[in-house]
Length: 261
Image (cartoon, rainbow, N blue to C red; front, top):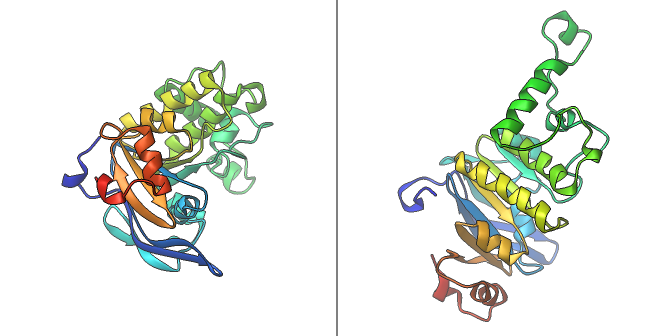
């Protein structure tokens, strides 16, 4: 992981506020993630972590606060805007289209058209180029599948989620956000996704991992952002604190000042 004290965060936020009627989802929340690190975000229900991630991925516009990407102020107006800026999000559900092939899933919403008249007028897809690029994406991540032409519904749960992770890695240029990517997977399938996450991190892309699974958090994270009651109360390193410490900070049983990184 790059030393955060000597570098500008790839993605950061300061003083985020978000209200839903009388409910305060974010209350002066700060955030930062650096190149080449896995930053886990944990928090109890109602802590505001989901709203934080939606703000960072462009799905929610904050009432107040600022977001910076590579040090430059940016205002996301939609998830498409965030994607255009290089931020990709992997969701636990509805991440892939089962009836489509691996290639079609990788290029879903980003389909390549054939050059010239065939593509611009007849809108024909450049299937050969997409397949070749898909094979390259999977090869780079050492993702073992028989063929990128097979449909996702023929894959195991871990492989299918791996396709979603690979898609984000293929098109993200700044940050990959993963929202509970292994929540519905078994031990073996979770291991496949964990391997992919490490390979993406090793390429220098920062990963924001939202998870309730503390063993996964402590296995993968370089730092852990702890959210409680709409605020970031601590950032800890898993090498310095135990899982029980993290839970205690998350629930308020341990003072946050004891765990500031």
